[in-house]
Image 1 (spheres, rainbow, N blue to C red):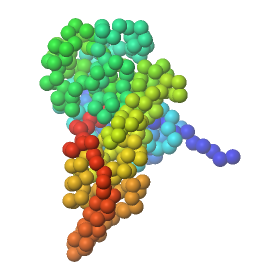
Image 2 (tube, helix red, strand yellow):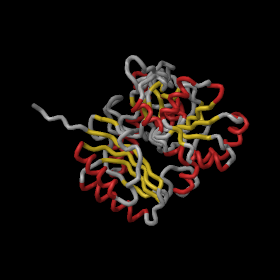
Image 3 (spheres, rainbow, N blue to C red):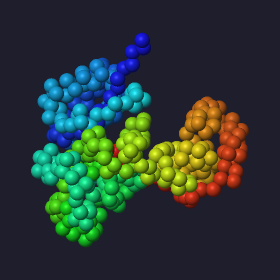
Image 4 (tube, rainbow, N blue to C red):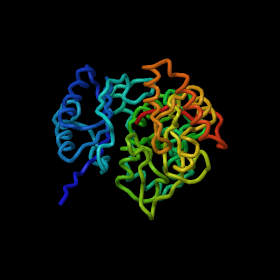
Length: 362
């Protein structure tokens, strides 16, 4: 009988003042490398943001390490926000020092984060969604637009920010729009809302709350249809199915055809790399470009990502040949341009310009 290993994905964060992020990062990197995990971990003076995958033994060892470490021993909701996955969801090991563990343009101390508080538990939030009057409160989605379009809580409104740096400018509009209503913000794992709540409260929006544990904790606990669509996640799954045949509905709309789909892709033009919702067949038909602009730019400079689902050309390899043999540049460029032109013949795009957004990690 073949043994099937169980893999889990852990996603967590912790705001704690770290005096030496470089040394802390190296220590974290050594331990997680030694036990063979794969991850994306950011460590900075304000704390840690981590999304990691590992088998059962690796996950147990990592949680023991966290619980025994003076900086990480108070991390909440690790188990509640974990997910079963079918293997490692990251191609490499990565632990980096960042000035901010989630980019807002402002850093807050762990004391400021704790004092802002106003965490709404998932039980209270569910009761609000099931029994509350939507006219009495605002559910504010703090994520990127493409994440919202793929899936969101019922009646949620977008924060109308292209990046967290825009949030401070938008707060005055929130005051006018929301008045004295209770405002409950949410994000994928909760980290963005920790900082945005501080910012909003400091700006005078006192009736502001954050969903404790974020979307991940809620959907891991309840399968009730209050979340519509799929959840955008920051690992190789990209689009995580939420619910089952009784509760799941698809709300994402293909950027090419408006057909409903849960599928997410990246624009194939490397300098763009926009996150887009796209029906797989339509994505292939449009050669992986999000717009006419990206298709035209790719024809000019041939900076395409290799995608064997669409064609068999290894564009990175071709660029390597040109780099090693500059005398072949014209010949290879013409070959690629002919190939691109042939595949885009008769194809029309709904969007004239790149669909790239400022991208905020959670």
